[in-house]
Image (cartoon, rainbow, N blue to C red; front, side, top):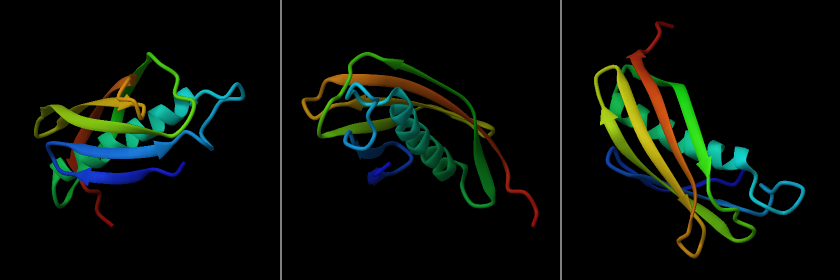
Length: 117
């Protein structure tokens, strides 16, 4: 999918993805590709918040697509809505190279202890 991670902190996780190779048949960025970017950013941010010995697993994601990127890169910015002991909720806003919002997502992750091996 070509995702590049640009920033990775508990307060803000940023990544970008090329439109090329992630298009629908008509040339627009595939909606599922936006969700892959959002889930990747949100899950990584939740796991960073969870800390050592804990694991964040996705339990819900939703996406609203508002614009179709057709070229270049899209960039996702993930910020926390809620960071609790057992639940992390993040918002991910994806924009095109002109800064226009293409997709808004919310992901919820359950935080639990890492399973024994």
